[in-house]
Length: 329
Image 1: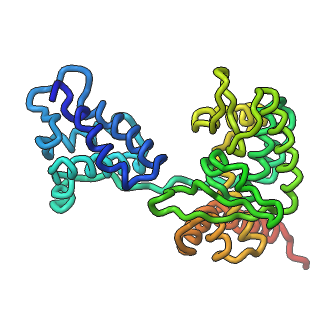
Image 2: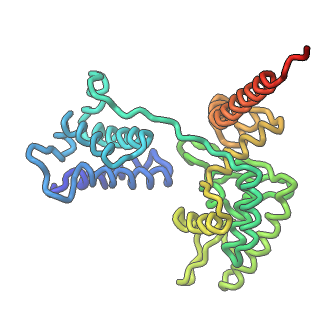
Image 3: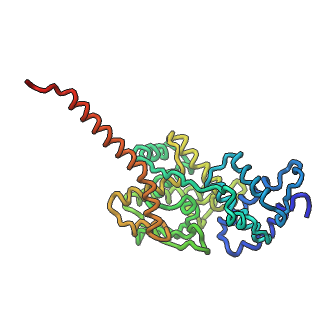
């Protein structure tokens, strides 16, 4: 099996799980497990007694793996995810060591700490829109589409990138999400509304799209946002290419953000404007309203802290005023 038995078994494992994973999920799992393999099968010489063969991995190796993740300063949520991927692979290899260690409960496994959910302020949104219109060319057209659709639909970053032209339905004022998260596994196709205020932006983008395709000698292509390569081919944007366009917007606007921040912003603003929780849940593609409620509750944590700060400051200010009042004789 060679010097790196862990790595050697990965291709067979990927073939085995492929029928049960969405394409994007499988690609992500491959990327993570290959990174895990560099920790389990390091390039440098292995220490004495180090069992890198999957079937021979025991508690010392798992403990060493956990410590290595801490040394790399991976977030607790990432550590937990990596450990789950490793467990799945080892179980497939016939080695349930991680499950046994969990039952014994004498090893401190990483606990997930929920990441802060960020919402963009109206000032941030205005700055992003302004910057998008300052960016020229095709990248500028994509940026304008991003700042229009993302905060008004709740689409996930990949869902806009993988939309098809035919998914946009102006007649019924809706967009069909043809490639949802977990497609063909647990994800369901859904529709999101085209709100009246973003319709002009989408129409403007479609005009720029037509000019872009014509300039590259392409009659038509199925992607809403096509990418024409220097080799004369046309395809969808990759995640990395999409991130580069986002980086242009971030640099021009001087607003640091993640594309998923638009999604939380949509959730917050929709509920704050009076939309029903069940409706927001359906549009966002959550499995149930409880997921949306938990999601929204995490968004409101900062607002709650700000409100407490405000209340205490007002109370202290009032106390100061009271103390300064001199009693009349």
